[in-house]
Length: 162
Image 1 (cartoon, rainbow, N blue to C red):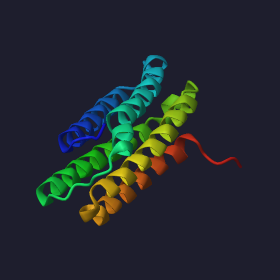
Image 2: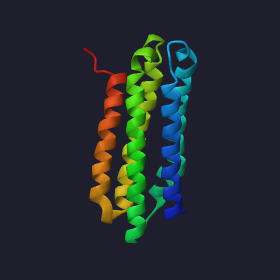
Image 3: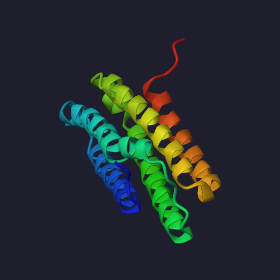
Image 4: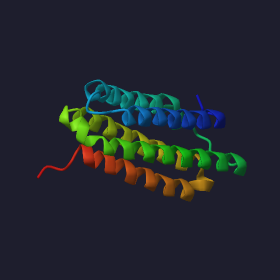
């Protein structure tokens, strides 16, 4: 079933809200509560990927049309910009908590969640480029920002072997 413009906006807003929730969860992590918050973070990253898949990836993969209305295209780009901004803030906080999480060996499940999020996000942004071809360049620039931030988080949690 095709996805509507409103569903795309709602899906992006919902993901931004979840990013804010994840950021708040991570910000609360301390040496005292890392044993409880580490698994919660890993779970929230997985739920985030599932939500992205159900709300946007699957419906957009079935979509055959594109957004041609300039106002709607601008609205999608604005929401993608918000999505990227909030995701970058989330990644910065996750990077900052690596030391505490690694003390309790939670870097491994967090790394798995970040890798899944990276793959899902790349797919979503590519689908949005095709869905809004008139704003492809704008979305590509935002996608590059998102990718750089997410790759930085993945690299911290999943460093290359020596």
